[in-house]
Length: 180
Image (cartoon, rainbow, N blue to C red; front, side):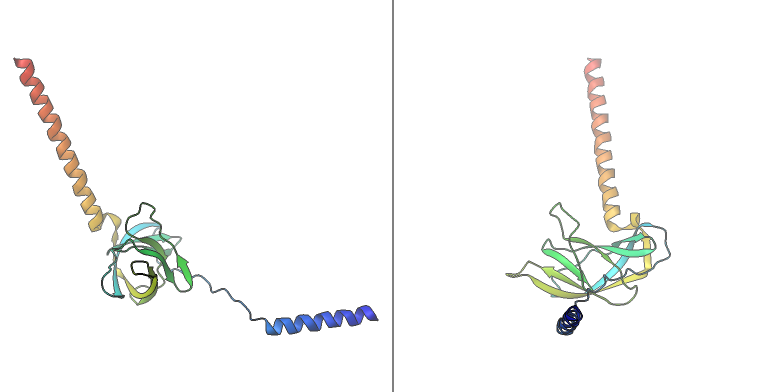
């Protein structure tokens, strides 16, 4: 009989503790929007609003499609962002070279305002700043059509031209010296 009473007392204590203990529910990570495209990297125009207006993000941004879900590579015009939040999920920079703060975040919606928070360390103390991003689904193009890709092609062409000129100059000098 004593064992039975003891069990009821423990169940009562547990019920009271459960009633007083707040439930901790972890918010789910924001779900990336569905997009009917092949997996790969593309370019997408993104507009940003909010903040002080001193910082910008690169547009077009890189659109990453994985298993039909859309993600964006956001590059700030500052090196002072140490994390971004989308919903309750925190994302940390992917760049390790010390360049501009760059993040890969899910795109939760196209052609509508998507709220994100960026934590900047540019001020005396870190500040979370709210921004609105709008990803224009009608602007999606090949990654090779971004201004960054075009600039990279120009640099490669300049290097190739310099190399060809150097080779031609060396060949001409050798011919001149061998003719003497």
